Structure formats: C-alpha cells, structure tokens
Figure 1 (cartoon, rainbow, N blue to C red):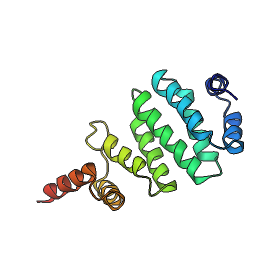
Figure 2: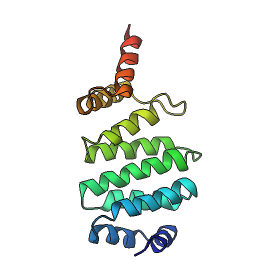
Figure 3: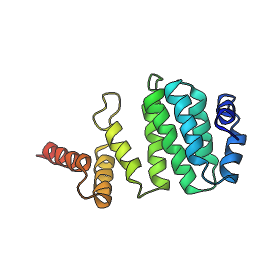
Length: 157
C-alpha cells in the first residue's frame, strides 16, 4: 500500500485495514504514524486521532501500542488542542505510551515538556517528579529534568 492509499484509509477511518497493515508488514509503524501526524496536525482532522487511538488499544505489540498512544497524544496536543479536553486525553495517551515503553526518553521528555507549565493543564507534582527522576536515570544531564526537579525543590522551601 502506498502513502496516498494509506492516507485515504485514514480519512475514511478504516481502522481495521490500518491495524492489519501494521500487524502484517514490518516497518509500517513509521509510515502510518507519519501519515497520521500529517492528517492530524497539518489538516486538524480528528480521524487521525481516532485511528491512532484504535491502533494503540488493539495492537498486539507493546512497541506498537506505545508508538500509537504517543501519536494520539501528539495529535491531541498539537493538532486538536482547540477541542475541549484534548490536553487531558493527550496526557492519558502519553502516560500509556510510557507504560508500554518505560525507558523511552522521547515519550517522557514529551510529557514533561508539553505538560509542565501549560496554563490549561496542571500535572500532578508526584507524577512530574517521578517522570523527571526516571528521565535523569536514562539521561543524567537532561536539562528539562534537572530544571523541573530544581523548581520542585524551590517550591518546598
């Protein structure tokens, strides 16, 4: 299936075809998630979110689940942010991505970057600290994690 065909499947919300494609062809995750990104972010089309969420909740592989939970979060927080509740739902998907891929720095960093200091969303301090510490275990010099932990300590004083 070529890129234009996959985009048509996404726009028609034919999630079973997408899931079959991902499950049966190796290295399709990047292609499909890239198309979902374009449709969701550039076109602001909610079908991209629905497809990503469906794949995330029905895929067999934990890596695929994590990839598409993350993509659902990105679509909600960047392309569909104008929809009421998008940030809250995006947070749920990013936490699920981290649950399925616990050592993925990209997912943890995205969570901390997008949700820290966002005026429309207040991340629980315990979750924020836990994620910052996890990120530091994976990347001891990570500026975002260091800054957040320092800010958290300053609040306690």
